[in-house]
Length: 367
Ligand SMILES: *Cc1c(COP(=O)(O)O)cnc(C)c1O
Image 1: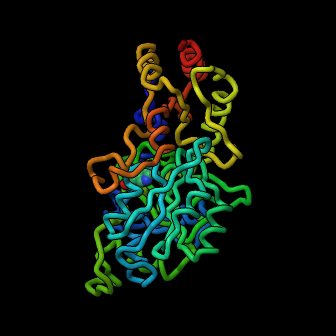
Image 2 (image 1 turned 180 degrees about the horizontal axis):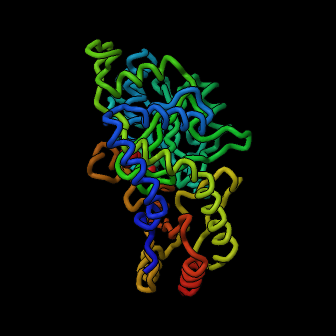
């Protein structure tokens, strides 16, 4: 069986380095917000090209801290409308509702899977205060269009980079540095994955960064001096130590992912599937390789029988979840169509040539 993603195999490469990092961590005697977190924050800010990186406990927490910080700074208030793609992982939308804002779900472009800028324009009202964009499946959203819209309509632009660590815009700016502030997840399956929960916020805005530094740690300015009502959302010291090891290889891993994606794009010619189309493949780090098929469930079962594990990202649209009853009556036909057609093929940097060949052969054999 070719697993969709083999985390044990991915992390086995770093066995010795992880052990060394654990020894260092153990002997340091500082297990919360120590040298490893400080070093990771410096290295990751440097990697993204931003002035600041704040290590936090998860991608969801990164997004929530951003929204809480904007409330404290007076840029956002409860009830403000936040534009967000209707097809994303539910955490993106949870961050909006958990912090007291109203998500306005916007349809994607069916070929790129990313939020459709024309649909954003239609969704803007006097209450709209921000756009939370997602670089879905590893591909940057339409960077230029979203920047223009956010400037013209005076909206905050926030990036959810959970799926696109290392993606680069044509002008050389990296994901995490093409908005006012960005949230990262380092959940184990992401392109840069920890061995547990972890996340980060990147920004060039010093005032915002300072509030988020405090918010992640009970709102404290220094020991027992609290400036704001905060949370416990710190990046774990040992996860920072592991992430530093893997960050060194992120670009190499992303390059390998792209090579496999190019091979899929070249060789997967079949009338039973629709391949993804990209305006610029260089803006993609292939967190996922997502094809579409009218017979998606049949194809998935077929591949499973042939020993190829696939996943669906995602099977149920957010507005159809019982957690979001208030949106159940919305009609978002493109989002709904995509949820019925998408299928993610295995794609990671350690897939062997034989495995890639077997995946391609089996997709082509489905009649
Ligand atoms: C994974 C993911 C998140 C949530 O990250 P966690 O670290 O699991 O909280 C948010 N948004 C998107 C698009 C994701 O893929």
